[in-house]
Amino acid sequence: MICSFICNASDHLGLWYTKDNNCVINIKKQDSKYFGKIVWLKNPYDKDGNPRVDINNKDKSQRDQSALGLLILKDLILHGNALKSGEIYDPRNGKSYNAIIKHVDGQLHVKGYMGFAFFGRTEIWNRCNSLPDIVNRSNKLEICNNK
Image (cartoon, rainbow, N blue to C red):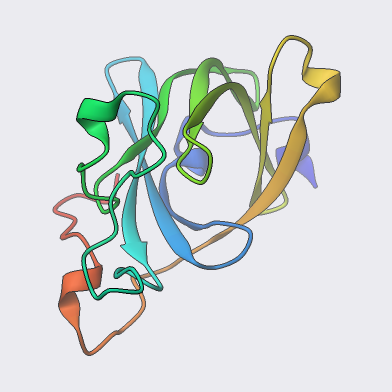
């Protein structure tokens, strides 16, 4: 409960399951900013058996970019117990939103919004201690350093 008010910067770092447990995001700090990439997908292939790509990206030149390794959190800065002032990218619709990520009781409350945060949508992400053990290793991106 104390973490609701006081958080270590490292509390946001590491592997996190998204709300539907269909992917894992690895959050890292680079210099004074935080970034997050997709490092595991439950379903890494599309219906035709091809690796999933960023098909909904508004930039057509980026649509063949692999979903694994896709940067979805960028330029976030730690303010108190929240990461703010950055963006979250939603590959389901190809849109980027302002982002606020709060660490609350061992979970991340991830909010994406346009304009005012009050009108945004919040998802709960849960800590992932290790990448799921899948027989086919091609659905996970190797992580050299979790923090």
